[in-house]
Structures are given as structure tokens and as C-alpha cells.
Amino acid sequence: MTEAALKVRGVSIAFGGVSALEAVDVDFPEGEITGIIGPNGAGKTTLLNVICGMNPPDAGDVLLKDRTITGLRPNRIAALGLRRTFQSSQLFAGMTVLENMMAGLHLMSTTGLFGAVLRSKRMRAEEEEMRERALAALDFVGFRHFANRTGDALSFGQQRIIEIARTLIHEPKVVLLDEPAVGLSVNRVAELDALLRRIRDERGVTLVMIEHVIRLVMGVSDRVVVLNSGRKIAEGLPESVRADPAVAEAYLGHRTNARAPSQ
Amino acid sequence: MRVLIGKRAFLFALFVLLFVIPWVANEYQTFVANLILLYVILSLGLNLLIGFAGQLALANAAMYGIGAYGTGLLMTHFGLPYWISAPGGVAIAVISGTLLALPALRLSGIYLALATLAFAQFTFWLMTHWTPVTFGAGGFIPPPIDFSPLPVTQETGIYYLSWAAALLLYVAAKHAMESPVGRAFVAIRDGEVAAQALGIDLLKYKSLAFAMSGFYAGVAGALYSGLLGFVGPESFDLLQMVLHKAAVVLGGMGSVVGSLIGGVLLTVLVEVTKEFKFSIEIAFGGLLIVFVLFQPNGVIVFVRRLLPGWTERLHYVPPDKESEEDLAAAPDPDPDAAPGPEEPTRAAAAGPRGGDPG
Image (tube, rainbow over all chains, first blue to last red; front, side, top):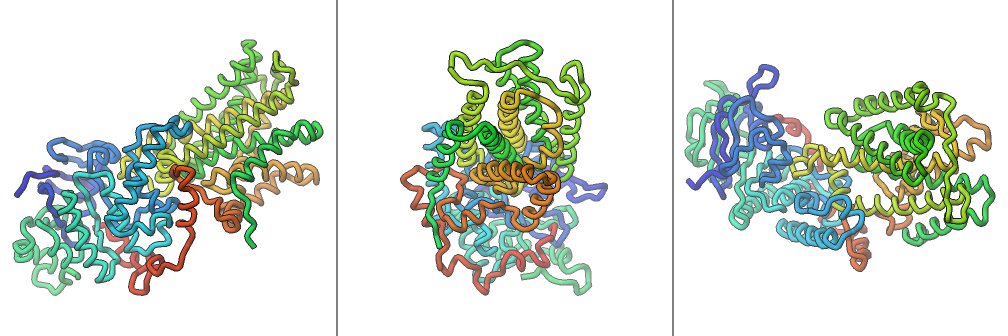
């Protein structure tokens, strides 16, 4: 196992007395894809929210490389190289796809309001560079021809892919994906699988993915972490997690015929 | 039928027309044209805040009043010339506007609207009741403005100052929105959480939006005190706020050129309403409701439908590449563009599992 790009140390958080995460420890190895699975209400999205700064934990720490990022505001954490997607599409409806991508490069800008109003030479050069990089990032996912459309003219699956491209545009170290395959058809899931591998292999980005599509998560992940009721119950290679009796019990229940991990 | 009127040609014609009005029109018409220029400034500033940054604030009339009172009172109490008092009044409006960003960091939507409305009513109360400073409900007459050595009257001087301010502030708003600032505003409007996740600082950009709208309203107020030669509280009441909002909605929320159109239309409609002795409150309350219900994006929507070159950007494009991008933006029969039958649309995909908190 390589060094961890992201570490979660003893993280606990409760909402109104209901514990959502209890002393969770996870290491996310650099340059690998880590899948997070677990039944509904296991605390998967809460864990992502804690990592990206939306919900500061009651106890514990989050470390990006070796820097503690606990308690920083989400935009500060984003500036340190951590990006995420959400369960629902979060493209900005009032912008074209190109502008959405350029919004992902927001922190590249150094000119501020006066540079913009006066259209300084540096501001124009930065806008041109952002535009080029946005188009290149769209090329990476094969969507350059959508650059001047608004998000609502695209299908849900296309929006999800563009959102993933937007997280990559500013060369992040770590990207968190919250159910990237939700609502995708079987063919699109296969495309997503290939895209995630390319992100890892060509970009060297550390990926953390919550996913319910078990075939995708087991196929693409280097490691899998299983959460249940706010606790980590298993972690390891996909095969070993699949064989773990505690995981089967979390999903199947104890000697009942509740539903199995869904496709 | 497609009538091709370029946006630049239209703007050029509009500002040339406004420039020559004092030479060809009578005093009343010139006064109305000057009001048009002020409402263009007010509507631009308010649109930056509510249309682009999505902050539903109801204190624009108060900012306008603070600009006017600040300017007039600095002249009256301290004997300062207009050239110092006006920037002073604007500065006070910017500071008050920026302070209004503080509640906006905690509140949104209707709660922010109520908090800013309370601020506006408090300002109005001060104008009416703090008699030793503001001269109370009767208002006051600031000293005349000396334009010497320029050989112009106060009316002409204020008119051309307003003209230059409207032009510069229009260009400034357009440039600001075609930049990372505009994208940050729209990102905050369309999704605060996603905006933050991309590194956009809510504190910084909300404050900036409030400060900018305070600046625009303050400039309009400083000019208004000079235009009227009188400053009184009734010019900055709730009705005034409704008029600003109506101008923005009429022109088009989130459209810079829409605010220009909205400011012109609103002023003309106000004068027509007065001419027919109809209630302004009913006319503009009604107009606002009709537009919010049936065309919340304003008349600019119809303009864009007819004239393709009127779409607005949130990024800078070098002039030689503009037409290329406009062509690319036009819808084409590309089969990839529309959601295919095997592809669930947003509504379908957000179905049973869309709200899963995982």
C-alpha cells in the first residue's frame, strides 16, 4: 500500500444526538481508487461532508497529505487540492458548460474586480488560458462539442460526466465522488468505469467513491471500505471485502431475507 | 422574421440619443431622460446583487437614499463642495451596503429579504425622525452645485455627469460579469455548496456583491440630490424599492443589458402612469406580479429570441472569436445533444434514489 493522500482519524459526528459516524479511521492511498460502500444511512455521504469541510466533525481529524484540514471552510479545503461531486447534478444552471468548467478554475484567477472591470492584460490572458484549459478538460471526457450549451440541454448522465471533468480541471490531489453512477444506464456505467481508470492512471488523482452499483465499485476500486451504522466494519481488497461475513450481514441482515447489495 | 440589430449598435444609438436630448428636448423631457439614466444605474446595481449573485435584498432604495442624504448633508452641514460630498455619500452607501452582507452570510431567501427590509425601514425612520441631522420629514435643500469653470447650469452638469456615470457603470458591470467575478456570483446563486466546493469564497463574493450594489445605488443617490436640488425621505420609501425591483425584473434578472432596457422602460412607464393619473403602486405592483408569474426573465428573453447576438457571456472572449462562439452556441440537430431514449432524464434519475442520504 502506498502512502495515504488522505487520512481520516477517529472521526465522530452526531446530528441532534443521533450519531452518524463513530470513531472512523480510514486511509486513502495515493493514486488509488477507494470505494466506500454500505447500506443506506451508513454514514457514507456524511463522511464525505466531513472530509470536504461541510460538516466539521465533533471529534477526530482529517489530514490531506500530512496537513490537518479539520475545521477549515470548504473553499479553503478546495484550494488545498480536494474536490468533490454531489449525489444530484450540481452544474450551475445559469452558465454554459464551458463557463461551468471555467468556474472550476476560479482559484487560478489573480486579478480581482478591478482587473476585470478594466480588462487588464493579465485578466484577458488568464481568461484565455482558463478557456483553453476548460476546452482541454472537456476533450478529456470527449464533450468539447457541448462547450457552449447550458447544462439543462444535456442528459443527466452527460451532466454527471461534465461534473467529474470539472473536479479534475484544477489538478486536484484528491477527488471525492458521491454516487457517480446514480441514474446511469448500463452502457454509461461501463463508460464511467473506463473514465475512472483513466483519471487514476493518466492523472494520478486519488479517487474516493461512494457507490451503490456493486459491479462498478468492486470492479474499479483498488480498495473498498465498508461502513454500517456510522462505523467502519471492513476494509481491504474488493475480493476480501466481498468474502467478509460482517459485510454480508450488514447488507443481508442476520438470518433474514432482506435485500442483497443491488446492482 | 429576424431583424438584425446588433447589441453594440443599439447601445451606441441609445447613448448618442441620450447625449443629444438636452439640446433638442424641453426641460421636462430632459429631466425624465436624466431619471432614465439614474434608473439604469440603480437597476444595474440591484441586478448584480439579486439577479447575478442571487441575494434577495430589499434595501436598494435605502442605499439610494443614503447616497443622496450623504451627499446633501455633507454639503449642507460642512459646506463641502459637491466634488467631495458626492464621493463621500457614495462611500457611506458602499459601507452600509457591505455591512448588509453580514446577515446575508447566515440568512437567505425570504429571511434575508426581511432582514434587509428592516434595515431599509430603519434608514427611512432615521431620515424622517433624526431631525437635527436629516431635517426630518420635510427634507432639505442642499446648496447649489457650482460647475465653474465649466459654462454649464446645474441641470446640464448633472445630466452629463449622469450620462457618463451610466455609461461607465454599464461597461463596468458588463466587464465584471464577463470574468471570474461574474462566474462566482452566478455560482453562488445557482448552488452555494457546489460553489464553495470549487473554492469560491462566499464571504468575499457576497460582500463584493453587496458593496457593488451599494456603490451603484450611492452614485445614483448622489446624482439625484443634484438633479432635484432637494432631498426628502419620501423619495426613498418602499415604493422606490418596488420600482427598482420592477426595473430589474422587467428588463431581465441576471442580464446586464436587460437592466439597461429595464431602467429605460420603467422610467417611461412611471411617467405614463403619472400622465394618466393612475396609481403607481397598483401599476407597478401588478406589473411585477405579472412578470414574476409569466416571464420572470424579463423582456430580454424576447429580444434574445429575435436577435441571436444578444446572448450574454460569463467569460471574456477576444473580439475576433466572438462570432465563432455565437455560432457554436446556436442549437443544432446533433443527436448527442438531446437525451436519448435509453438515457434517463434528470427527473427520472432523481426518482427513488435521488434523495438517499447514504
